[in-house]
Amino acid sequence: MTIAGVGMMGGSLGLALREKKLAGEVMGWGRNEDKLRAARKMRALDSWTLNREEALKNSELLVLATPVGVTARIGPEWIAAAPGRCLVTDLGSVKGKEVERLTRLAVSPRAYVSSHPLCGSEKTGISAARSDLFENRICLLTPVAATRKSALGEMQRFWQYLGMRVFALAPARHDRIVASVSHLPHLLAAALVNRVGDEKLLPYTGTGFRDATRIAASDEGLWTGIIDRNRKEVIRELQRFGKDLDSLEKLIESGESATLKSWLRKAQLRRRKLELVFEQDDR
Amino acid sequence: MTIAGVGMMGGSLGLALREKKLAGEVMGWGRNEDKLRAARKMRALDSWTLNREEALKNSELLVLATPVGVTARIGPEWIAAAPGRCLVTDLGSVKGKEVERLTRLAVSPRAYVSSHPLCGSEKTGISAARSDLFENRICLLTPVAATRKSALGEMQRFWQYLGMRVFALAPARHDRIVASVSHLPHLLAAALVNRVGDEKLLPYTGTGFRDATRIAASDEGLWTGIIDRNRKEVIRELQRFGKDLDSLEKLIESGESATLKSWLRKAQLRRRKLELVFEQDDR
Image (cartoon, rainbow over all chains, first blue to last red; front, top):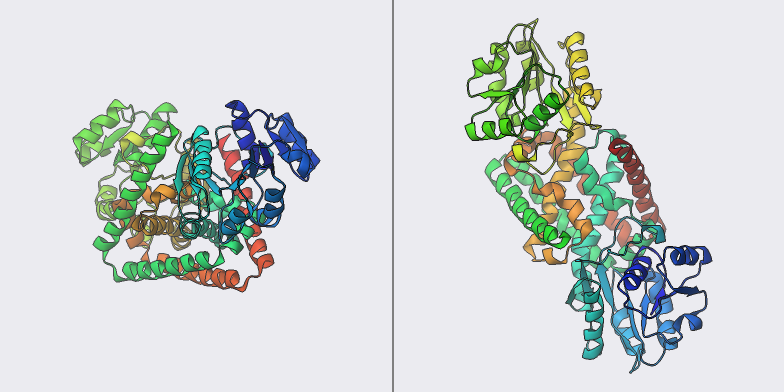
């Protein structure tokens, strides 16, 4: 198995594969020798190389664990260079039209199935890698019309072996959903920190603020790429959320406490239900 | 010492006082016998009563650990009934004009100094009480012109004994700050949960969403009271935040990735700095 890119996600994948003995050999590829050495030292890789052809030799699974912009750029040549029966995936947070293109490029018996494991964090780099990162988390697969069923099933089983719950949905639907559950919350957290930081109010923040803004500490380069690539959906979410805030403002201004209370109650019940789901996951 | 109201905050205070042996006797008051019994059983109280006069007998410190609305209603009569040298405080999240009024009602040698320990959570009730709740957290005191310096110093030392870092600021400034660092984040979290929940997207949420929305699980009654009492400042914060989101939307639409990246970078640096502060606290 080949992992291209050994950051937090790629490194965690290597650790998990080796711990569960799911791969004969985990080969790492990257552009930075020091990072690859660190990954090897952490036992996230069996071996590593800076050379694409060497990285792909005899590989049965290629995971492009590179940032979304890099994956779009290098994806076609990696797929073209992959061995005959190689299954190829990526871990990108935005899917867009790229999935169609890469799926067509993966000529049978090669196959490409795009993945998005929902287990990112504000931490980055190989030092943040954890072998249990994928356990009980969700992985979204985004098949298109040209995706072979057998490849989709294989990809699904791969993530299930790592302990993930797998859902399949169309790339466009995926991008709409993550704009709402991931990209919007990210931008709100950053906006909160920037607003409060401007006014030197950080010393007055408590645990609630801390939790609510944790994701704002994420890598800014990675996130610029994500927002840029999902611009249309992200803007739509910002607009819809802005309208929600306008309604909320009117509600608070009206002084209708009972309506405010049931709005807060609705959020409370939903959030507590979600906590139960997470607690189950954590067991 | 008397604690009126034995929820998460009052109960934690009792546990901390008894653990640190800061009080000869911790007397609890409330309107629900079962809750008082539970608090006694957890060793958050030495004794309890449903009777105000009994609760205040020989008390040197009265802590009104009741929700903000209740404190405004019962505060005057409790202050009037408190023994001669009793120091009185409350733990309310909104201060408003109430502090002026209660300070004047606490006729010397009685004294009233309003407190706001920033250590709330989405959990409520005596079962969520913890003796270390206050440790390394921040407590805001809101003195007014009539507040005696000696009483302010006494109140400050009290919270410091419990391990808190104490800041003093005017009630109006307090309310502006908490609207920004606490009430706005709370409403954003609830709005996120309500938006996403409407669309049955909860199954697709990851750890980022989980952290960002944790506070939305808080008690809706408590929070309706807080928002209602700080309505003016909360609306102002919602409006300012709405403008921030408009600018952000324009920025994303413009495709100026470098500007977006530095905006995200600013948030990242601030949030990481904040994490360092918290890590220090957690030691």
